[in-house]
Image (tube, rainbow, N blue to C red; front, side, top):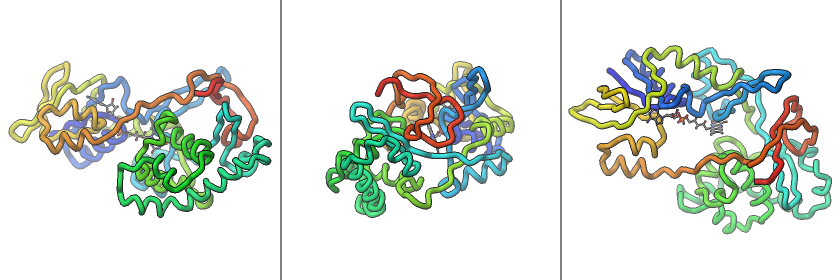
Length: 321
Ligand SMILES: Cc1cc2nc3c(=O)[nH]c(=O)nc-3n(C[C@H](O)[C@H](O)[C@H](O)COP(=O)(O)OP(=O)(O)OC[C@H]3O[C@@H](n4cnc5c(N)ncnc54)[C@H](O)[C@@H]3O)c2cc1C
């Protein structure tokens, strides 16, 4: 079969790779000027050394990502241990804490004598403990928001503003004022899938040695027909075949795989029926925002800011966002 794959993020890459391995003629179209989409790695040169940073996909763990791990083994891509830690700084409330250990929890000495801080810890443990039963209680209800759930179960303002909101805003790169509108079930399910709501037994997080570009490069090298700067303008079906329109002309395929986002796919597929339209319209999108509007790079040893053992300069806020 002749198959078109639209989009070269991890979804498109794996689809194209597996379809080609199964003997199909695959054509991979990417509108950007690099393959990988959110799987992207940049090189940073600080004058003394060069290092890499992933700008999208960063970490995985054995429990939640068995298929990714299988893929990395097939591609002979090496992984290394990484850390997932949370540190919070709220300037206007003079709050700083980190979740790594007791040292980072009380790195700001004021926290030792702050009753509200102890309340936050108590409530944090209560929330984490209750999470599974809260999720069951929601019975898949996608309408109840996180804010509503917290109010309903009398969670304090401290645990909301000093823990849950910063944690979720960091995970989803979302403005803090949008987090409480998140569907509670999505939030809980995600946190539980990734074991984010437990003190003990957290998974070991891993990252790709050399960055996610390593698996992107290995897959792309194997795809015979691949095109960059190839923006698909529209897709329509006729007599069991599929027509793709690009600036370069019209191409016909037996099948098409949309590895683009639902809102992009909705604009592309010009002959969608009512059911397709309803499904594609049902996804909500939120613009990713940088967490800080002004940043500077500095070295520091203040444990409350983040993971221990930092040897590299980090970007730190100069102004709260
Ligand atoms: C900052 C950040 C950090 C993240 N960290 C993690 C993490 O640590 N662990 C984790 O599991 N997930 C993480 N994620 C999420 C993860 O990166 C994404 O879920 C995943 O990469 C999405 O892959 P995708 O293939 O679905 O989409 P994308 O990677 O977005 O790929 C879609 C591709 O389709 C192309 N495209 C769209 N329209 C067209 C068109 N008309 N013609 C041709 N091409 C088109 C786009 O240019 C794009 O390249 C993170 C995301 C971000 C933003």
